[in-house]
Length: 125
Image 1: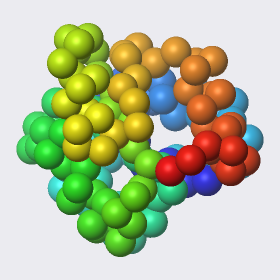
Image 2: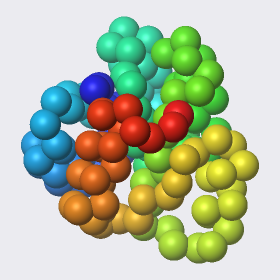
Image 3: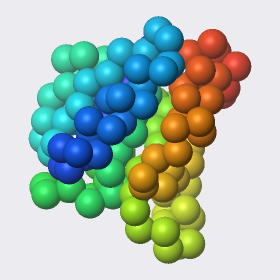
């Protein structure tokens, strides 16, 4: 399973990359901007997106539909990843099509569990 992680904070990207090492069969690519993510989504064809809310050139809520279009997959599963724990973020994320909101710092067990479920095909898109 291919995961595209989009976050402008390089430390967060490295932490997520290290987290993914514990999920067998998962490949990861990272992007630091919305523009880089759009390019990767088109060229690399990810199976799952994890997108930060606040990017230097994009808002993660607004970026989702563009990433799905670039990948040619309108139903591409995606998680919003943010340190902003406002309750309205969950509602906003769901309204634009995110599966869930993952809080930062990411919880290793939760992320690994979800990646394993998705890579085994037991989770719906």
